[in-house]
Amino acid sequence: MIDEGIKAIVFGEEKTFARGTTFEDIIKEYKDKFEIPIVVAREKGIYKELSELVEGGSEIEFFDLMSGEGNRIYLNGLIYLLIYSIRELYGKKTKVFVRYSIDKGLYITVDKKLTKDMIKEIKNKMLEVSEQDIKITPRNVSRLEAIDYFEKNGDTDKSSMLKYNTNSYITLYQLGHMYDFYFSKMPTSTGVLNRFNIEYLNEEGLVLMFPHRYSNGEVSKYHHIPQRFDVYHEYQDWVRIMNITNAADLNDIVSQGKMGNLIRLDETIQASRLLNIAREIHSHKDRLKIILIAGPSSSGKTTTSIKLTNYLTSFGINPVQISMDDYFVSRKKTPKKKDGTYDYECLEAVNVELFNENVDKLLNGEEIVAPVYNFLTGEPEYKLPMKLGKNDVLVIEGIHALNPAILSNIPRSKKYKMYISPMTGISIDNHNRISTSDNRLLRRIIRDNRTRGHKVEKTLASWKDVREGEEKYIFPYQSEANVTFNTALIYELGILKTYAEPLLYSVDPKSEYYNEAKRLINLLKTFLPMPSEDIPDDSLLREFIGGSCFKVT
Image 1 (cartoon, rainbow, N blue to C red):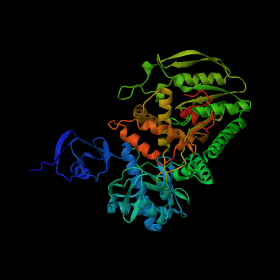
Image 2 (cartoon, helix red, strand yellow; image 1 turned 180 degrees about the horizontal axis):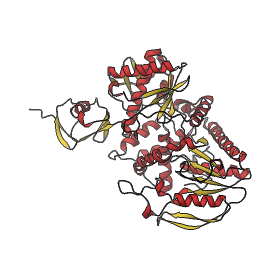
Image 3 (spheres, rainbow, N blue to C red; image 1 turned 45 degrees about the horizontal axis):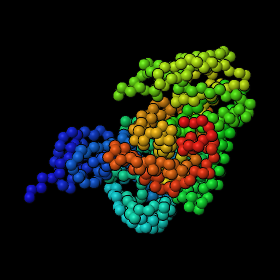
Image 4 (cartoon, rainbow, N blue to C red; image 1 turned 120 degrees about the vertical axis):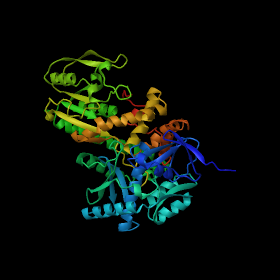
């Protein structure tokens, strides 16, 4: 019988391939179509590593590093390349810690005193290993075998994490003599990993820069924001003091039934940090008349604003709140995106002229009639009379609150700008961090379902637009802030698992969002579930899981 091979659709054409063809083989055939490196394929709705065999019978899609999954894979490949190169240079037992995202890069520390010359040496080694095009090979091993390997090599963070894993077998990735574990698929070799830069930051760490989804495949230059770095550093110190730096540490607390004390400590520390911000504002009450608050989606802006205003009230300051959302232009004047939908996140969707004029009049002691935006009719309704008293201060929350174009006619000395975000400090293990974006996405999935009845797919469908809006209108202005407030809680991943995991399992395997739901499930599998009874009703986390004493939606 003649073997006719396997058929698949590639770039809209049905093609026949020999059995044993890999996705990498197809890429070589179509290499002229790719300007940016391809790192993963998708067949029958499932992401496949390029070294895997083509099954046929469906359309094959290819994704470069500008896609969500592709960028995640590329970054994990770069992290592996960096760790491998460092251990080749300074010994197999050298410890490397992937800390957190910092200005489109990753802050990474090493258990050695770093110098600028060492950074050059590490970069050259990475480029050398990339040029050698060494295979990165998946190996399925028993979980117990993996635990034994990591314990013998001093990677106790990984062995401890795997003790809470119930899988019989684990996929490790081999690069040269080294094996490691990552929460994504990986590039097939080091050859593709040549778009990066590393920069010396201090004696403890470096910054790994890489192409991100919005950089068109280019590596951005690093711009240091000392304030944001200091907040992260402060939080890292706190998690080290608590001895909870990774998933296994938190799981130990849960398994010992000690969650209540941890929750109370964590909530107290977060409240204390916000109280200190209120004290700082109070110390400059004679000149500060405007507090501007901005942050990405699901950062906890509503609860933070309410608690901050309560603290300010206790100091004799009367906060008057204004939402920039009430200053949307008429819907018929709202700019549209390329797909024809309204772009409510762009600055042009806001009546900036009226907003600036109203705030200016309020500061001059005049009375205004402020708009309240009617989201049903798409029209502003002018029905809110406002006038500031002697001890009143404006608290303004909005996506554009840190943009210098807002209130540019008012001296900076009268404004206090606040950036908030959950800067997740706990990691899965030393090489697998939990991104701030994933932390926020889990919060949003829970809140959207609880308050709006949205299915997980609806939240996941909107997340791409949300992220693009943040990249354009929030993140570029972080450095404008007078203070950065971290809304992450050490314990929250155990709580988010309890609420989000059942929702994620509802996503149908045939859904285009199944892969993303499965990825989040795999992330949450590393945490034991935590009950929420001990979480106070004024906790920021209540904004998402419910039970808040504040009016939050």
